[in-house]
Length: 347
Image (tube, rainbow, N blue to C red):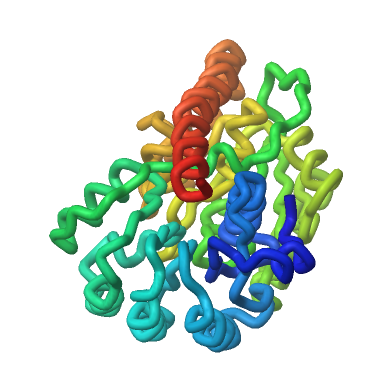
């Protein structure tokens, strides 16, 4: 149930939400929007306190500062990363009027190493704080780095993935896929290098890209235009078709904030094996050591495994079944945790 302004006027909100909402649509904004809908469905009457993510981050902080001083009850808050944590620390000093605060973490950068900005934010928070972490390793890193023992829910992103259409997967590997908001840090160069190593393989690259990366992708496609496609941004039916067409997803990210990409769960839900790098929560997300490849030798290791699947279809068929089973295990556990959070915080 989306946010209803008329309902808000009739009944002051019991839950304020300081989050980024679409546009643009990315993993974090998609999850935030769904969480607000779930809290509303439980009678929470949430009030988003920010403008859409198009104006992130400056207007977000101005909007929140105005709204938080009017609020009470409960607060659902998504922390920033990097320099935005300085403003989060100031905002935390305004949160004392809330009875309960739920922080939903979507970045891993301040959990890779100790971040003094994040520590200042934590120290400025009142005592009534609970956290949503995306994995057990995220929770362990938080305890180890910041020596805090707050109430923590471990909730992965699997419940926020739209259920894919049931399609018969190919029994042979023909086409790779890469889907992201494409920058060099997201691993597009490693994707292209992997593809060049396997002459017979096809690939679809999807997602918006910066101008310099667009030129690089265009040159890559022109090398073998019958086997390589750049689709640009894909949504709705185009995104469904992307997953119908590919046999393996590559995700060699080195993005510092990478936590638990929705696109990996989307691929697993569609029974598509995923080869990725060990960033953030991805090793636990894939739960398959052979599919976690080093950043330095990703192309070589990925090409070796893909070639094995090409020449041994039975091995690839087992990988397809395994991908779906990994997603189903995550979904079962995460769905229980999500119901618990919504019942407790929305009640």
